[in-house]
Amino acid sequence: MKRLTFIFVLIASSGLAATAWAQTPIAHKFIQVAPGVYSAVGNGTIETRSSTMVIVNADDVFLVDTNITPEATRRLVSDIKTLTDKPIRYVVNTHWHYDHADGNQVFGPEVTIIGHQNERTEILAGVLKNRIALEFQNLPGQLDNIRKQLAAEQDPARKAQLQDRLKAQEAYQEQLKETVPTPPNVTFEDHMTIFRGDREIRLIHPGRGHSDTDVLVYLPKEKVVATGDFFEGPGTGALAFGFHDEWANNLEKLKALDFETVVSGHGEPFKRKEQIAYFQAFLRDLWNQTKALHDQKVPVAEAAKRVDLTAHKEHYRNINGPGFQEATIARIYQVLDQRTGSN
Image (cartoon, rainbow, N blue to C red; front, side):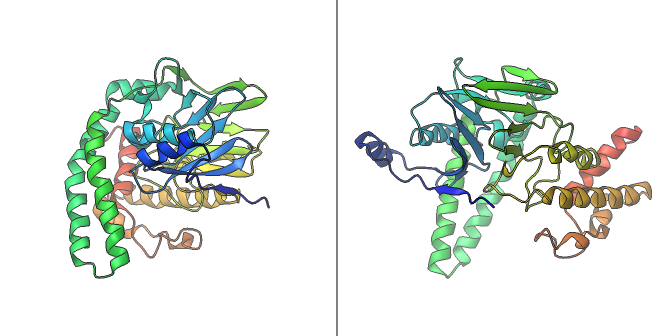
């Protein structure tokens, strides 16, 4: 098994890079997964929420996803300069969710922003405006919770971590205010292939899954695939979205690709392709149990208590016993109701 090469970008050798470091601390660490291909993971100095993939081509840079705010993406652009001085010319969003697309606005007309055609339609219809409004609604409570933890914490190291977290979240609240939802300016329906020098970059819409805008970014020569939130390997990811039965089936399209390394939308890169089958089994069990309770007209709150996914706890550490997130069960009920035309 090939080992991933970890590149912790702390300071470049040039005086110019040293000056940049003094002015703006590095916000991302870069993990090399193939020649010229990196996963960019936030290091906690600023709220980034998602991980991105950076592809350095012969003449330019191709970026997979932006971060959760324009400021986080500006920091990402700055950090990429520690890898290369080539300009970013392409950005692709793996789906419309705000933690993967809210930094789109920092790029000018010289940058091609690519996404599924549904993403452009949905952003123009206001999905990101609605999500940002919800984030502002939830943030005060989240900040209060961190402050309470901070007041009760006795361990100095943990207290320092909480203080850093509070500082980052308070800054995030301010940074979110400048966000202007920006849709892709180039869209596709099923697939698109882009060639940059000798680099082949395939964009694939696998069908509805985590959203109806999911895009896989596949590098066949390097055997690397960026999956966004369509597949997060060791984690189940955010499940209060999507179309869970279709998601399980459409993962077959990911399974059919010849890849070795996954750069997902959160966390660090990973291998082990067999985890796709684990996730498919999990999604199908979640869907089937929830559908049975829906058909029996069990209320959402009660259904959330009765769904039992402990058969999958060997693969997913967040499953500790019976019961599941009510928001996820509510989403499955919503999909079922939409299909049957009931309220």
